[in-house]
Length: 276
Length: 257
Image (tube, rainbow over all chains, first blue to last red; front, side, top):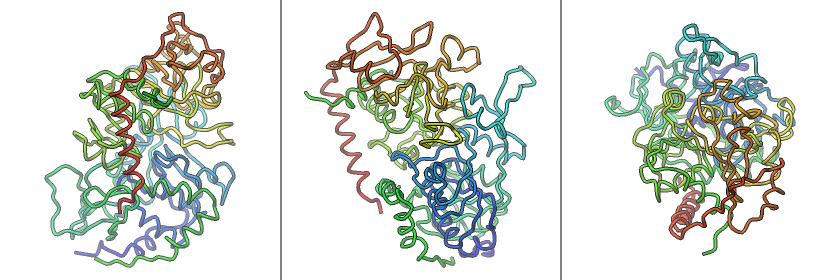
C-alpha cells in the first residue's frame, strides 16, 4: 500500500522537469518549503512558478536563478516588506531576468477554480477601472453575461503541470487531511496534472469527520513524509509560524551575495532522505 | 498623556468603526486599528481576513494575513475562493479597510509599482486582495501616513479603484461598492467632496498645522468649510493599543521553534 510514498528527493527527481509549470500553494499556512528546497538542491530550472503569494520559498527559487516566470497576486514578505530577490529580479534582472504574470487574489482564486473545474476561464466582478487589466490583456479579458448583459472580468484558467502542497497528515493509502487555513490547496490539487504532497505525519486512520478537507489518494501522484516541512511557515496542530524568521529574512535576502551564502549553509548543503 | 502621531492615526481610525459591522481587514495599520476597535467600543465587530478566517479575535496582532493566531481564534475558516466569491463579491462585507503605498486625490490606490509597469523604478508587492476589497466592500476606509511621496496628484498605477477621474465615473463603470469614505492619516482625516469626489481635509489632528498638511500632500488640498479638530486619544485607547503592540512585539521577536 505504500507505493505512493517515496522519499521527497525521488518525487522531485521523477516528477519535476526543467521548464515545468509548478504551483506550490499554501496561503501563509502549510507552505511546502522542504519540497521547494529539494527542487533547489536538484537544480531544476527554467521553471514557471505559480503561487498567489510567492513568499520566501519563491524568493529563494528566484534568487537561485531557477525561475523563468512567476505567476502571482501578492509578492511581498507579509507584514515585513519586499521580497528582495523577486524585486531585484524584476527591477534589475539579478540573477536572471524574470517574466511576471500578475493578478489580484480574487482573480487568481477564480483561475484555480476554473482549472479545477475543467473550464477555460474563471469569471469575476473585478478589475474594473484598474491598470492590472490594462497592462495584462493577454490573460485578463472582459466577458458579457448572456443573461443580464453585465460586463465581467474573465481570467484564464490555471492548469499547472505539477501541483505541490504540504499537509498535516496522510494515511497509509495516501489519503490526505488538511485543516486550519486551507487557502487554494483543494483547487490546486484538482487543477494540476500531477500532484505531490509532503506531510507532517503518516497516521493509521484520518479523522474525516471534523473540520478540514480530505483529498482522496487517487488524486495524489506521490506522497513524502517531511516533518517540519512547512517551516518557517506553519502547520496548525504541529508548530507555529516563525514570525521572527520572516523578519530576519529581510536582512538575509537583501543582497544576492548574502542570500547565496545563506542558501549554501542552510539549504544546499543539507539533504533529505526520509522514508516512512 | 503624551501620544505619538502614529497612535493618533490608529486610534482615530479605530473610532470610525461601528460595533457589529463586518469588516474585511488588510494587514498592518488596518489590522491594528480594527483590533483596537474590537478591544474597545466595538466588541461585536466581525473581522475577516483574506486568508479565510471569519470573526477572528486575536489577542496579538498577526504579522501576516494568515498567521496561526487568526485561524485559532476564528469562528470559522473558509477557503480563499469562498472568502473572495461568497463574502466579498457576494456583498457580505460592510467595510473594507486598506492601506497602500500611494494614493491620489480621487482615492485611487497604488500598491504595484513606482514608475512604469514594464520597467519599474520600485517594484512593490502588488494587488493581493485590495482591488476587489476596494470595489466590492460596501464602503472603504484607507489608513496611510501622510507624506508628499504617498499623497500624489495622480498615482503611477491604479491597483485599486477609488473614484478614478472623479465625479460619478466610478458609479458609471458599474463598480458596486460606494468607494473610499475617508483617508485617515497621522495628520488628519480626508473625505471626498460629494460632487467632485476630490479628497478634502475635513478634520485636523491637534497640534498639526494646515500648512504642514498641505506641505505633505502632492495636490492642492482643499480645506473643508466645516473643518473639525480630531478628538484627542483617551487614556483607555492608548493603554489598550500600547498593551497590544507591546505583547505583539515580544511574540514576533522570539523564534517559535
